[in-house]
Length: 196
Image 1 (cartoon, rainbow, N blue to C red):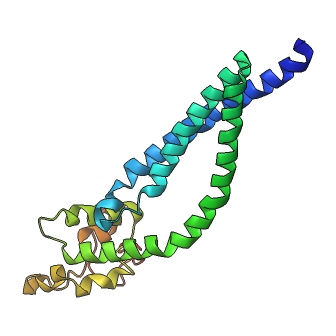
Image 2 (image 1 turned 30 degrees about the horizontal axis):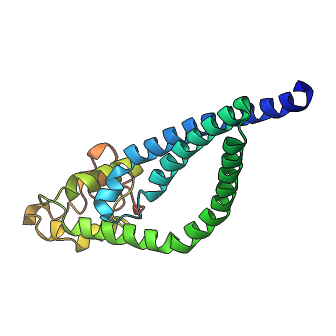
Image 3 (image 1 turned 180 degrees about the vertical axis):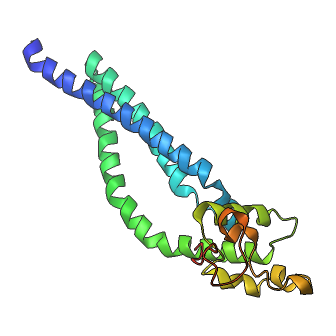
């Protein structure tokens, strides 16, 4: 009797363990993305920005539960749990087909929200809104300056309100390597690429 059932039990148990390992990896990756890029959600004020990280964490939790159901169903030979396990496998397959389609459909919405959010925050730079620290963090982390390029700063209230003797300072210090630059567009220490 074990000759027919033991290989199936072993395969399903190994599959459950694989789901646990995948769940641990997904939860770690999702938490890492969420913690390191949480500033983007503050800048964009849009719910699209960190949804992928939340989905990754949710899928990780789902896979962990699925691994438990698969292992218990295989070891206890419970048809109900095995049926639930294979139903969830079908749901995962459907999700794998629909996720790329939804990502393709909403890619422009996410792109527009990030561009608009960065622009709005640049207009509020140097105020008490928290945008200054968020923009500085983003520019230092991604080694970028402005939304599309460094010259975007010339059209902001921050630049317009610079004292007359500081008008050569076109960019915040976070636009330059190590926070220092000669404020010359030809300066190699200036990050010329935009953050968007």
